[in-house]
Image (cartoon, rainbow, N blue to C red; front, side, top):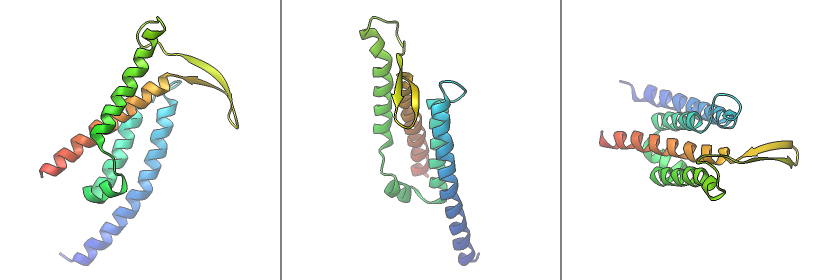
Length: 145
């Protein structure tokens, strides 16, 4: 097989993967924030982000991905669990049922009046857990081969 053609194919794949990565990340952020009023949220946003990271992993290699995005995915999972747990437990301190979320309207510069929920913090925890677990599994499988 001609190595020069393989290198050209790698460059095309890598260039396309970087462009597609950013498109998927923007879409996953949109899904994350859309989760309060339409389908989406932390779980599907996290899956989309993990899919974008797996795309980079396939186009490059695990060492390159680790250099570009130096995250410890196990710590990310633990942080996400802590955020989700603390957000869900805060209602108990206010003598409310478990997982009761609080919300209020705020007048934000440039955005106008917005409703902010504690559910966003819970979704952030779920988002981090899904990314952390998915990437840990993918990298563990990849390292064993």
